[in-house]
Figure: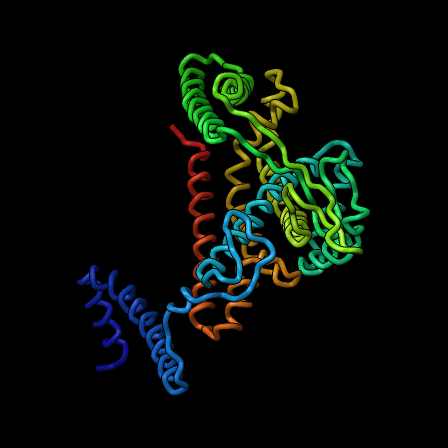
Length: 399
């Protein structure tokens, strides 16, 4: 039997069994992945046994014995466990990622639209911004904002004073702290307002599709989100006071602010660098999305009397979003992962706190690195799921 007839027989065998042809490659792929993972796991276990190293997560309950300078939302000191230290690092990572995504989105949309402005100066300045910040490595930008800008600020005694309300110094930005009475009722009113607005917007959209009638959605939403919480101050017993930062002399030559909220310079530098860098790529996504809409759509909008602003809001952007969202999702993921550069300026994120200090103290390299990788993977998957849901929600549905 020659090679040609053997090959023909194999092809006939799989052709007569379509299910086998479909499932066999998948089964082989899964087997190969399991085999590789199992081999390396077994090899690591053998090497750890030879060195007398045990594997487990019991160390998470042990005392961490180190301090963290920035611990929002979680009470932490050196007597807390490694699990608490991990939680603090994770929260700090999420904080800087959310801040970066928020400001990068706003700046990116503004710059992207400005690049297409008929005003030569605005368009050129937007292009210059993109070319500068996009082509300088992120780590260098991070060093610039931290060492060349924020570390050159004055000492607390000579801090930059913003109307005796906020103060900016080398120690960070100090802002007033909100002190609420019946704050839970105020928060409940905001949530209730959002729910009411959500259902009203659905009703307005349905009415517009059926009758063509348009409602002042923005004014109605603004009224609800303003009036309902305001009523809690009038009849709900809600009140708000402020705790302002005050300069205190700690010793003969050392001054610092007490009270209020302290935003450390490491957080400001990292948020600035991530936002300005990622905004350049989001701006290009926005520009590409807008330019992806045919000129005929814009001319048709102008022919029925829409202003350039209305054309952008009602015609161009709803269609451009389906082009903008997928690549912008990638930038959100990149920003979240790039936040791990925080270790370069000692911002206590997940990498510095857990994969740095905790790893050096415990020596649990495999466990800690695995947990850290799984944490970033979970954050990225969460962002992807949300953005994919939003992308499907705004998709243009053909009837």
